[in-house]
Length: 440
Image (cartoon, rainbow, N blue to C red; front, side):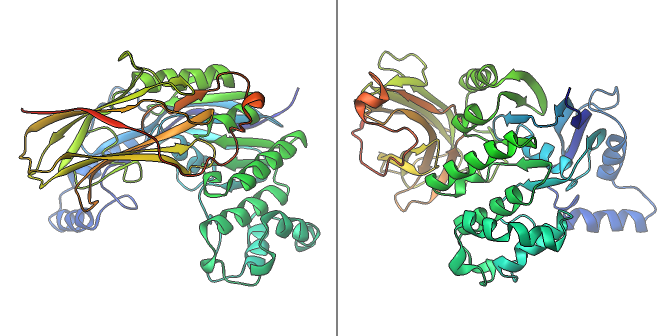
């Protein structure tokens, strides 16, 4: 029986909202002022009370300006296992990886790792921007505990895999994001770590390199090493990971076969409605001035039933509700579909909603029909945008709703489609069939 190489027991992590590095400048000044007066800052009391207790402790109720990113997470991973981690944005996946890689400490519980770990959490993790690609390969190897002779032995293989031969002696600060991630992945995968931790970084690379990385991870796993794979790319998770965890609200909602976990992830996403406060603090996935906010986003079939899976050529209906919070001169709506494999924009539609000014407190609804969505079979991530005529965003909801799945009518081979190949950018017919507004 293989030995356990990752053991997580009742792991929890508390964050104070609105802080950088544990506190804001304003809070630091306030704490100093309180100390001079011989008093203790309220937030300091809250943080101290939470530091040594778990989320289910009687004293661990809701506290102002705090949130539990992880709550009593427990699981184990055996040597040679490939484990997938899935969940919506803000579920706690990246926090879990940061604890496993010792970037941050847990509030309570423990995580034990047995073996040499290589991590790829974001583009350029562990790289020094002023050093060349060659120098960073040796630097990363040293961080992993590799001897120079070991790095020398794998050096040519790393460079060939990363496809950066011409830029090897160029400082990596001049690399594109794609070059950065290619080199970072090549170093992490080739320097023979016993455990490989990977966050959602492969979306930066092109489709050919993503396939190459997936193949390399399969080779790593077959070699008896352990892979811990966090991704929103369900096709990659299904292909690579026999077992997966579903993280919801900082807890392990499901630990089982990947097919069951991915289905549960999609079902949970279908039940989630986007409101004006949904993921409002996630600047990467929801951003904009906030003058107007989506209050509901729903994908329907031609009959008006909520749906996320369609056949090629089916009609897709998008129902978007919104509310105004500030005066705005005009309102436009846009929807983009992105490839679930590469993240590239496949198609987009944009429509004017109101050319005249809107006042605070007004609510509106927009229905957009895509009458014959002849998209290639595959999974498409969604991007919804509200803004003005000058393309200034009021609200952007990016990849917060369940992806669309397009099924082929007949076999993929008969139709000549490869779902994993780039689809390119093309126009798609759309109609604005409803545009109503009313005061609150």
